[in-house]
Length: 156
Image (cartoon, rainbow, N blue to C red; front, side, top):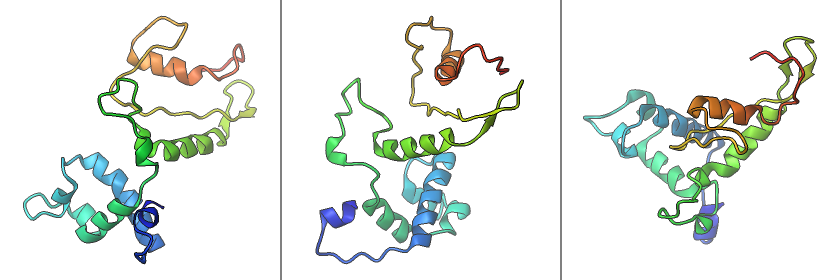
C-alpha cells in the first residue's frame, strides 16, 4: 500500500467499511462532477448525498493513502501516448476479467457464451485497426465485437 511505503513508521488505522464507502464515493462524485472534491462538504456547494456518507477529513485521508497504481511509472502529461486511465488501470483490468466470466446468452441457440466487455471513454475514439473509420459509436461497437466468434448467427 502506498501509505506504508511512503511512511513505514506511521501506524495506519483503516476500516473496511470506510474503504468501501470511499470507493463508492469515488464513483458518486464522478457523477456529480464538481471541480474540487472539497466542494462536496463546503457550505455553499454541499452535496448532502456525499457529505452524509463520510466526513471531509476521512475522505482526504483515504484519498491520500489509496493508490491503485505506482505513480512513479506514470508518463508525462505532455506525452501523446500516455494512458489516461493509468491511475485506475489495474482496477479496470480486474473488472474486465470479472465481466468476461459472466454468462451471456446467444440469441439463436440459447447456448451460454462468456463475452461481456466494456470500454471507458477517455476523450477520443480511434477506429479499429484494419477497418474503416465509421464514426465513434460504431468504432466502439466493432472493437467490442472483435473477439466474438464470427458467423455464429448473433443478433445485436
